[in-house]
Length: 107
Image (cartoon, rainbow, N blue to C red; front, top):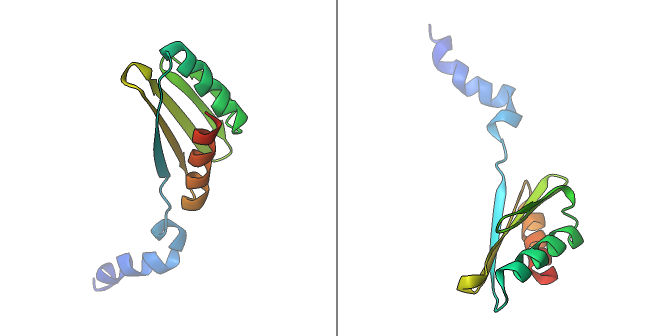
């Protein structure tokens, strides 16, 4: 019965990929705007596509969503409040950070 105490420890060494599972990294940015909601949504769609998030692209009621490989972007317009939210999710910290900056600059 002592092997039951050792089994969980051994599984970490036997299955390192499971022990080191990587969770999605999400980066957010905000941009302050003074445009109409309709203009904001159009610009969100263009920014997502121009930044390479044209796979599974979907215009949303308040912005846009798209996929680029293992990364996804969501742009949400709240122009009546003067703000746009950008979020990029994916497996790599640096890449997700760079992509959210690229989308924000494209907006």
